[in-house]
Length: 359
Image 1 (tube, rainbow, N blue to C red):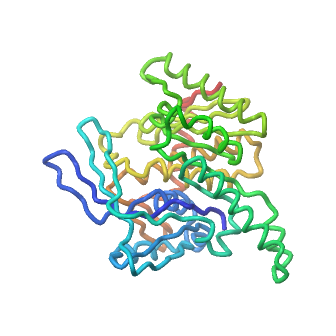
Image 2 (cartoon, rainbow, N blue to C red; image 1 turned 90 degrees about the vertical axis):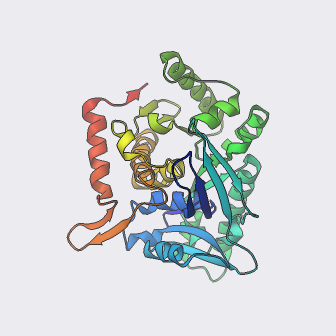
């Protein structure tokens, strides 16, 4: 298993500013989008190396089940006939801000929800509070140790379980505030990658960064450098700040990299709904880091950011998830395009136009 997310699956109800009509029964949730990001780079049959968990309530729409099944991932459905599927209400305000609230009790995913195969994953994606992040990392490691020590576990599996998995943590937006910064630093010590978006990053630190100004970028650079250095007292760290339409900023001990968004030039015509873009970025990022595992730490995570950027570009081109089609000639097509072709085009664009900033 290459990638497993412990994010939730949610069915969304999305409301817009008039006169645009609302959308209901939209597939959503961080788990769905993170799985999508990884799945984009794992065409069938390799798609089985992407794992996630869906709590399937009594009201689970058949068409959504069929879509998930068509992806051929290692999705574990946990049937919960005594409750409704987790649902959420969303509304986009005039300034683009998205209001969000749960419409019923949420069904969270933890290490006890994972199958034996999912517990052998090389990469895990978490979206939660700092405290829950620490508990999940410890819980997954304990489960893996227990499996490795079991008498009926073969040597190949035991060796795989001894390899250190990579943990990618997305801080819970509601808890990105200055009073949580100490807990944030504690959680950062147990993960390999931490990735808030710009709004969450600023809220966590109690600062404002205007990236329309050079001073804003300078402040972002300096602040990321300080956080990474705090983490580097323990081991290497990667801080990825997702910047929406401005791309992303990858901070490591010896280097910082800024990458543009894929739809940098055609955002008005191509970007339909940004929901899930950040989660999808991290799913793609996880696969990119795995693909580049033999590279240096710096090169590995810079390559991962390229994958993440391209993954996010597919997520935001429609309400819900992109359409996957299979062609006997071209293989898998997402929204009519080959993912590999878009990745190569983006790499060339960044390389030839110098569309990135390195420090």
